[in-house]
Length: 130
Image (cartoon, rainbow, N blue to C red; front, side, top):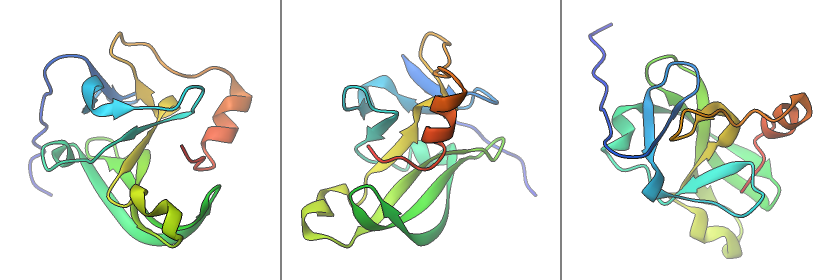
């Protein structure tokens, strides 16, 4: 295995809660109110230097069948979210190419963690969709 090169992002960032690796700028993230996840418009090549994308698989989500791939922190290997490869329903095609970061797997820009309680952790770890 070679040397690991991490990109340091400037400004308000979200990072891996385990190893503090920078994952996304606050400006690149949008969310629905009350959501357990953050959706980012795209993980550009710049962000992909700090994540790796796993194997594509079909997964039944709350809005139907999607082909997705988990996103892993490049430094510690933790799953931090997933990316939509293909939406199988016409009204879900807008999700293709978009990625989701799970809140409870991140540290916020102020260093805060999004862990609320054990019940929230269980719900969020089941790949709840935005």
